Amino acid sequence: MIDYKYSGLNVLKPEDDFCFECNSQLDCFTRCCRNVNIFLMPYDIIQLKNCLNILSGAFLQKYTYTLMGKSGLPVVGLKMNNDEQKSCPFVTDSGCAVYESRPWACRVYPLQPESTRITEKKGKVYYSIMDVPFCLGFKSDTTSTVKGWLDRQGVPIYQEMESLFKDITTALFLSDKKIENKQIQEMFFMACYDIDQFRQFVFETSFLKQFDIEEQEIAQIRRNDIALYRFAMKWIEFGLLNQQGLKLKPHVMAAKKEKLGIK
Ligand code: SF4
Ligand code: SF4
Image (cartoon, rainbow, N blue to C red; front, side, top):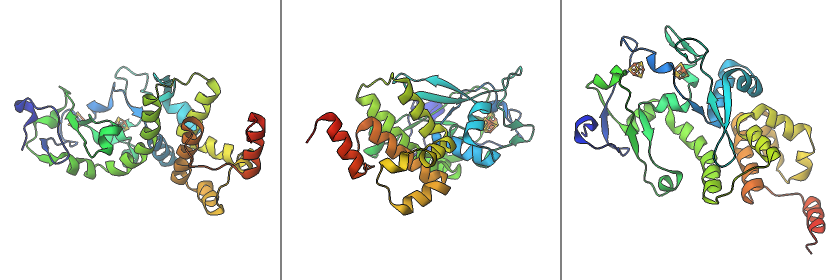
């Protein structure tokens, strides 16, 4: 077992052990749900808005704030309450009110990813342990492997969904492209974070007349948020990275070529 507290090692691999346990009997219970920065991934928002039974737009408006990232793309954070402790809007005396749908960042704690999408694709995944002085969970002798901990917290599906998003942000980062066009920023925001608005955009505009999409996929994205999210990522890749996951209808392609003077 690696004792990160004394070994000086600060990077763990999935098979490495660490000591930690959290439970409601500890004096620090819910202390970690106050005055904390939590950035939300697109999949977090789908889970939370469905748990609260509200539309993504209403969720974003009530519970989040938006910042512009370095690449010119919006980043969404969970807005803490305006109380003295800056509490998470979902914390209660008995714990997290949205526990089954809690965000990725809350699940992965006390681990912190140290690998990039590029190293992950090479099978190299690293984590460090967060340094949180008030958290008594570190005093426990209970050990877990990094992988075991993440599995028990339900992290793998979040990682799978996040990887679709990270593929795009990593490719944009590597291309050194800064998105400055406001309309593109808004479209990116809608497709990534405001999934119900994106569904309206797909089904209530001329969108479906532009792209060659199989009927079965149309039926899936109409009713299933995850299918729609996967589709949204393909649409962003098509628009921002020129990837061919989506195909324009032949007459739309011909009109575009004509406009550009391409034979
Ligand atoms: S042990 Fe750490 S994670 Fe658990 S409630 Fe206390 S501060 Fe939060
Ligand atoms: S979402 Fe739940 S676990 Fe995460 S900070 Fe808020 S109350 Fe705590």
